[in-house]
Image (cartoon, rainbow, N blue to C red; front, side):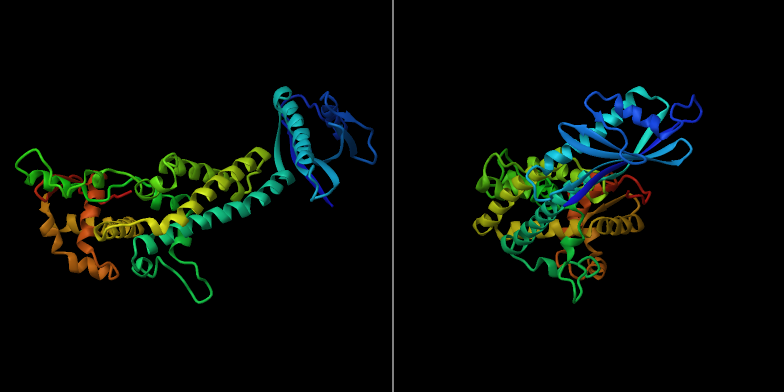
Length: 386
C-alpha cells in the first residue's frame, strides 16, 4: 500500500489587493470547483475532498507571507491494483481543476508544482522500456557493423573514444547519446563519393555511363533503406523510424530530467517502444541475409569511421589545407600529407579515403569549392568550423 501526492506552491502577488490572508481562504478556491465536494476540516489544516466517487485529502500550510504549500493526496493505494491508473488520473484531475481556477480567475496569483507522484509513477514504468529499446538499437548497429560489414570495426576506433576498462564492458556505442544512435543506420548518405561520379562523367565521350556504374550508389539514402527495408517491409521506411526515434528521445528527456510524465506520455512511450522493438528484432533476424560487396563494405567502414572521429578529422584536414595552400590545391597534393594524418590516426588504414570524404564535408560546409579534375579552391580562410 502506498500514498500518492501532488504538491503545489501557491503564491499571491503582494502588490495588488490581498485576497488570501489565511489558508482558509484558499479552501474557498476548492469549493468553487463544482465537481468537488469538500468536507469540513477533520484536523487542523487537513480536509477531505470527494471527486468522481473517490476520496482525497488535502492540507494547506503557510510557508511565508503570501506563499502557501498545498498538498493533495490519496492514502493506502494498492500498487498492484488494476485501478491504479484510474486513481492516479483522478488525482491529476483534482489538481488540474484547481490549477485552472488559479490560471483563469486569479491574475495576481501563480503556482509551481513541487512534487508529482503520478508523474514519478509513469516515469518508473517508462524507464525500463526506454533502456531496453536503446540497448536493442546498440545491438543492431553493432551486429550490422561486425556481421554484415564484416570487419574488426571497433578495433580501429581510437582508445580515447572507445573507452573500456576491466570492470566495464561498455565501449564506443555506450558513449553515444541516445539521439545520435539513429544516425548510423538512418542518416541519408551516399555510398560512394560524389566527386568520383563527376570524374567518371568527365571521362566519358558519349551519353552512356559504364555498365559497372550504379547511380543508386551516389544517391543519398540510409543504410536501413538500402539493406533492411525490402527485407523487413516496404512500409518500414528509415525516415519514419528516425522520426519515431526523435519523438521517443523527447519523451525520454522528460523522464531523464524529471519532467513530470502523464499517462498520455507513458502510452506514447509504450507504443513507440513496442513498435521499434518489433522492427529492430525483425532486422536482427535478417542480418545474415544481407550480402555486401567488398567495395561497399569498405565504403561503409570508412564512412562510419570518419563520422566517429567527427569534426577532429575535418578540423585537422582543414588546418593542413590553410597552412599549406594559398588558394587552390589538388587531391594529389593533399595526398602528400597521408603519413602525417596516419600519425594522428594510426588505426585508420584508409587515410586517402578519409581525405576524400572529409573534403566532401568541408565542401558541404562551404569551406572549399570543388572546381573539377581533382582540384579544389579555398573559400573561407578563417578557421571556424562550428
